[in-house]
Image 1 (cartoon, rainbow, N blue to C red):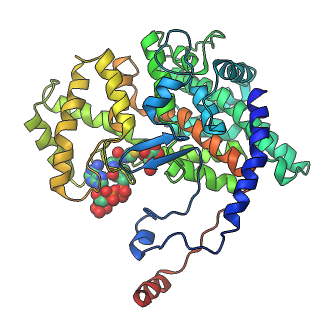
Image 2: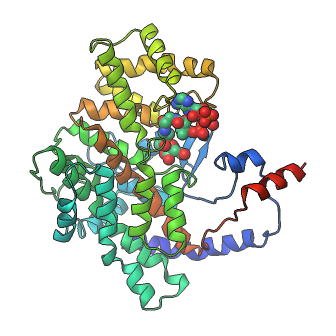
Image 3: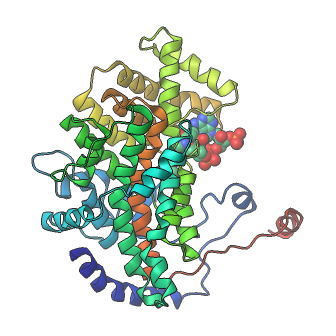
Length: 434
Ligand SMILES: CC(=O)SCCNC(=O)CCNC(=O)[C@H](O)C(C)(C)COP(=O)(O)OP(=O)(O)OC[C@H]1O[C@@H](n2cnc3c(N)ncnc32)[C@H](O)[C@@H]1OP(=O)(O)O
Ligand SMILES: O=C([O-])CC(=O)C(=O)O
């Protein structure tokens, strides 16, 4: 496999490079304030992640490349505007923009494992129909743990240096199946349990759209874009950090990704995309289904804040400007659905809500994040079941987290175990500090 050859060549040199950092073990790299600990560890530099970096003002770079650069440089299927999402996985893993041949080799490798075992279908069918799609998604993933090559090799006594290899194998097998699992959940829950087989001629991203039942080529491109945009956001966000933490105990990819999905399912994280579209449609309903005026949006936003709720899709723990993932989706909308009334509402909200949040004076970042824009695009192409949206996010996020934890094992990072103290001890520490 071309990817495995590439990683086999890279890993020894990256292990050497890590030794230079380990030699600096006693150097102080950060100072932690009381408020940071009690405030969700915001800004504490306590994680190392090479797949991507999030600048508060510029947004995400995948291995140093901005979103527009990735859109321009990664190979694309045929005449399509958006790249192969598996090209991004290659980039996250290797740091290099792949050739088309390299991406196609990965597509072929994935196709070997792109089938849904009957026992996974049975597990999904055993769950009550009103189970949230994210609960179904996470359950299906953990159910497949019995197939883990990592656990098998661990039981056989593999060495620490070998661990990245079964981590890579498990990741490929899992990622290959995620669109099938997601599409199965979608069609079981919302499309009368009628399923669409994979198309062997489609790429990983296009196939996902096909199996969901949306044959529009524009939607396939949107899916490719979506799968790239939501993939990786360095390693401190809830889903990626969870994946890293769980995998640090040498739990395999199935456990790590299932747990990561459970974090993504929270309304302050990935589920905000579901919440956000709901908020927008409720806003439009409130004004008789039309595009509300800016004054009406302002009043509605204040009503939300005054009732003690957050405005979903706005704010961020790290970003301090409009999320470039929002901008990329806005550009897609301007090209393909400029006159859509919900998109117009999204645009008007963008002109109003940051000012409202500034006046409200609480949110450190009044600008929109990725979740403020993803729902309207899905809705436009007929995917209108909001509670499914986070599953789309999850399929994409698994690209980033698997890339991160394959490298965790390649570099032999230890089990994560920060120290806690009692609240009383912590108070005394803070009182006695400068
Ligand atoms: C893919 C993603 O995960 S992107 C984020 C998706 N989540 C959302 O869009 C939900 C809405 N946004 C939020 O709740 C927050 O902005 C978060 C969770 C994203 C970030 O949280 P934090 O880093 O704690 O934000 P911040 O430091 O600005 O919070 C300060 C205060 O402003 C509030 N605030 C932040 N964003 C918002 C918002 N959109 N609407 C109303 N209040 C907000 C916080 O709730 C907090 O209030 P509190 O002091 O009463 O607890
Ligand atoms: O970075 C974060 O904390 C949240 C986020 O936008 C993501 O995970 O995509």
